[in-house]
Length: 65
Image (cartoon, rainbow, N blue to C red; front, top):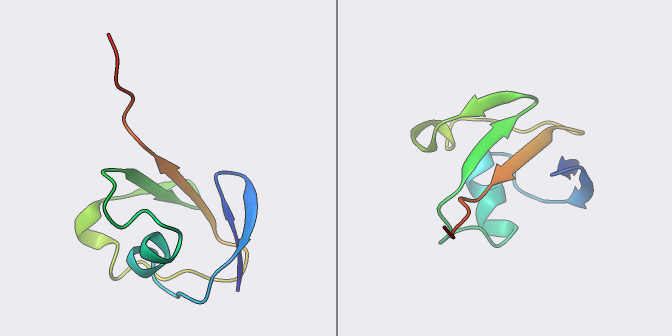
């Protein structure tokens, strides 16, 4: 299915947010996520279902000082 990831159109087979993160290469990364503008905590990613054209925001913490 086609979804938007940080504004970029991507194709994924996954139907849940946690599986999509693995498929997109974020499995080991510490990230914050939102789907269609709503924050999704890590504990809820497994039950957060994705639909065609879902918009996912994936934010990684910045390092530096």
